Image (cartoon, rainbow, N blue to C red):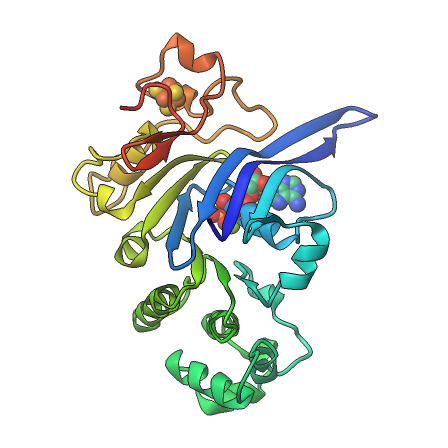
Length: 307
Ligand SMILES: Nc1ncnc2c1ncn2[C@@H]1O[C@H](COP(=O)(O)OP(=O)(O)OP(=O)(O)O)[C@@H](O)[C@H]1O
Ligand code: SF4
Ligand SMILES: [Mg+2]
């Protein structure tokens, strides 16, 4: 049984465009993804592809004007709003993308200690601060006294001491120095090896490949491919979806060929395959219906022509 199952998740926002006219922004469409205990699933994809909203939907912290459908299950049972409140910050922990999630009125050492469930909280907090190169006087500081990198290391520390079953880390490492990034990645792997399920949302595919088991590729609010990390090599010949291949080839260390066109606007999604307007393999059939996610070669893909 998967520890976390997201099935057919759709999220939209309504926008009034003068008078009573409404525009619907479909920011997540039929998104399906699962996370296993002991596994690191890296989530990659362009900015605006819905990665943070997925994290917020799982935690139950979507903005109040968001409409949502689909199901999210945790440990086999539906994650209702009441259950989300009960497990949030305890069994399921978020490392948020924004450092504004730190409590501005609480010293950061104390903030980290609140997430220690058992044993000596002060000792656990000092140990994790040491691991993340935060000096001993940092624990008495307030968030406004921290640099961006220190604030991120504090957020990361909070999740790392939590002994949660699921950690969702939303871009946890920008602004950190390379040695701390390596430390954080090792730490995620260590936690996963001890049974934690980690969803690592990141722009840094290269780093993700070093520690993740699987990579989920997001495009325009849905998963277009889930692939084992071993499939990311060469020209992307083992990958399944044209977008994943193009994303891989666009990396500076590969061919550095940009993908032509841009991600569709959430208020005007194409009716068929969401990638069709940019896809070199597109046929008439691709524009007729949204491709279903299907199993293919030990992974999953949302493309009717993938082999
Ligand atoms: N409160 C909101 N109201 C309306 N649209 C929103 C809201 N929050 C997010 N969106 C839109 O939803 C889409 C997905 O946003 P999301 O923050 O999940 O992207 P992301 O993949 O995390 O991007 P990034 O890599 O830049 O963090 C974007 O088009 C964004 O503009
Ligand atoms: S379904 Fe068609 S348009 Fe979409 S990714 Fe596959 S080949 Fe390209
Ligand atoms: Mg984001």
